Length: 348
Image 1 (cartoon, one colour):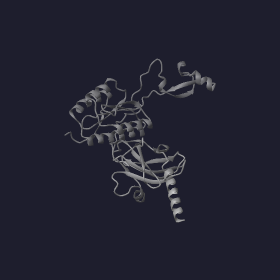
Image 2 (cartoon, rainbow, N blue to C red):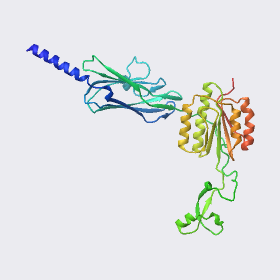
Image 3 (cartoon, rainbow, N blue to C red):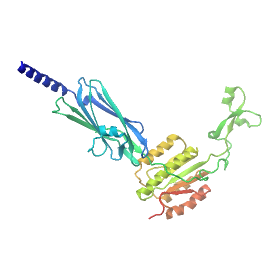
Image 4 (cartoon, rainbow, N blue to C red):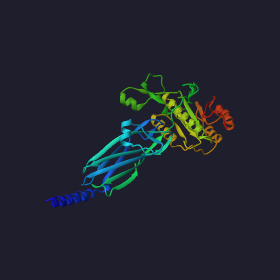
């Protein structure tokens, strides 16, 4: 009787071990997502993952290890860190242990933050499937497929009244044919307006004569010249912080602005909008602090076609001789002194 129970137990154990090895890791999928791909130093973002068992066999043991980039850190409570980041692990290694029935999923999330500006692959993961007896574990790994861009942080910038000039400081040039882009609205025809101002489309809609009402005052606008000539990394990082703060400040004041750069932040035409700010912040995060040509050439490109009634903001690492020589040209071009912001105190 004892021998029968013994042999039956061996057969049962062998069967369980055999079927526990039937699960194919190719049918166990892992998906990652993040709530924002653009962040700033110290800002917390949530990383989520889901493990799905798509096979017909259960996974009796599954181990998931997520290895984060060295510039990312986990921002969770001590109890969570003690459960999922055992002491002795080097770097940001997060470990999970669970089992999965056929067609079931396992999901969790945790918060991470970037230490400094840059673009980072979130990391990669390793998924291990163990058999019933733990004799032949199988491991598979891949990248999470997520990229996190960390832009520069904000900094304090001086307030000035020269940014963009005064609204209505200069009237626009009038032509025989009016510019359709200066249309502000419509109003009832009073008999004093010229016939060319009548909008026949609006007249047909309202049933009474309606004229176009134009805005003949120039909106204030700013040209931001960003000099990325060779300088220590710390000084250029400070310039990145100034650029982000300037763009967000102009956006808050609803001042249209253009960006002109001689480096890998590149240039942008004049505009306004939250998506524009996010695009510039992403370029700041992706920048490798590379410059292509000198500041004098950057000024030549802007002076060639200046914008009427535009003010200039110059962001530069240092007040070098080239910058000093170019500032009077900018002043003559726009009719006012440009605002100068330096990332460093003195050029070494």
